Image 1 (cartoon, rainbow, N blue to C red):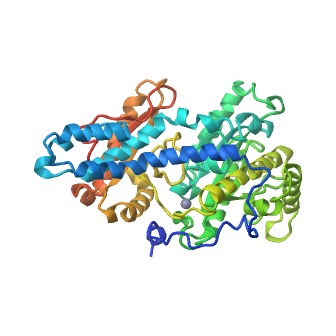
Image 2: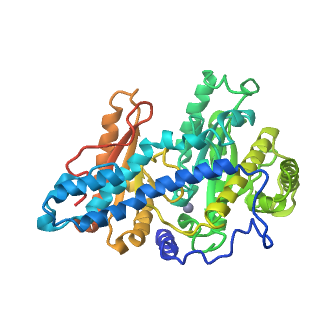
Length: 508
Ligand SMILES: [Zn+2]
């Protein structure tokens, strides 16, 4: 079996048909009867606000099927179109395509097309309301730009795996505010593109030299660029629900991400001189619990697959202590691990700013561990895939929630074919098995400052949409594939605007 087939087999085997949580509760919280998991360093108020946001977004998608069932029962009524639009507006706040409703009395309702249409609109609604809906918790996140700068970083560039379970990793799991100082680009298996990262690094370093970060704390001492790679694993079903790109082989996932970080440092040092390389950090995410393995860089800035601190262990070991004692316990454990022997041995200890960041990340993640304990019964009910749609092209940074969409990062279908195929396999189990189509949102961004940029992005979107329809032609012909194209301006007002195209609402 070749690598791709093996990946796909591992992906689908455990996907949505996997048994619901049969694993024990969260190992971070093993208590006696009557005891409660409440850690002194957890921000309970932020957790409640994040949970309210999660419920709101999920409800937007969950309401679609109920609404469609409701209108399906009315399709032979004389004023069906009017009634259906009224119900859609009332329950979902957007209209349905009139032509699909008008022909219902002859051909019956095309529920697959309506379902896909609603998924796209729900996604756009989430993007457009993100600023308003995320406001209650955005400023409460502990890792803001000022703290990152105090730790010595002007930019944090994060590449998680594109797996839907990592979609909420920045605000939820890391508790980091996503602003212009935080770049997030997901890649299957966290295998980020070294050349693209070199370009991002060069762009931000140029901005630094131009004084763009002089207002940040610590700017005088010199701020640096930090690259973080985030791989993932499943503690309950390690061989089935780990990273599909790495065939659920945890060792391969961590070693590949560590190697890619090394390649980036070597590439920049060879191109721009010794000392130019960015700092790097390697993080592992247990997608069952949202607990982290934070790999500790050594004095040379090198990361190692075996030298890490486990935040579930930190939570358990410091539960019941007051805030000050818990902080001291956590710091002592991290310092102890820096001096470990054997496979994890490093040379010297990490510099002060990096140590401060690691401590901040570890403490912030305790809140997410307790979030899962309190709001998801200690371990996510669906530990595998449960995405609503596929996003192909460039991601929607406003959408930050676990399992909301499967992301295939690509400029052309040829180069992203492997990722798209994995996504289609996932949706074969999620949607096709139930008779629903696969909704694919083709999304690209452009810069309104650059003449012709929007037109080029629109052309690219159409080219990718056509290539997707051609690649999965049999599904498209059966009405089991629906594509929609959307564009966003990186600097201006246009945000996830659907491209008007005669074929864009339906790929058949
Ligand atoms: Zn993965």
